[in-house]
Length: 161
Image (cartoon, rainbow, N blue to C red):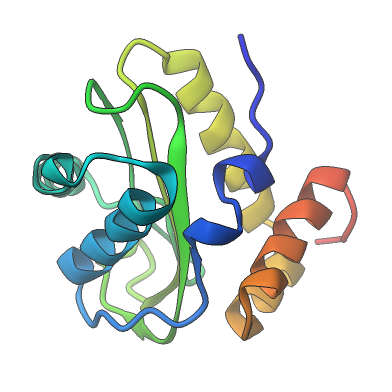
């Protein structure tokens, strides 16, 4: 199984330090649009992917609490893991498990037949977001490089909880 670094999946071109959207669907669309622009995802797949993500949210919210949401799906519409990270200053009502607004969004898509890869990326994101210091840095990020620095720091095993 190929191992993915968060800074490779969520590279500089798929980071948004100031999301404009004010609702869940808008955030998902905005993050998918980043992937279309940066990673060559076909624009015709944006709406089907958005529908798949919204269907996934109906099963159970990916708003994990602590100001974080991790919308993710396995889909036949991508050939490799791809994703985007967004930050919302004001926060978005995302039906999080703690009822708080989500400020940090890690959206990722993985090929349907690559469950192990999907779980590996999800595990790495989960480890990062359990670190309150990383979340604080992400919430305070004002530039894409600030977000990328947090991802790289998490990969290196730095920081404390």
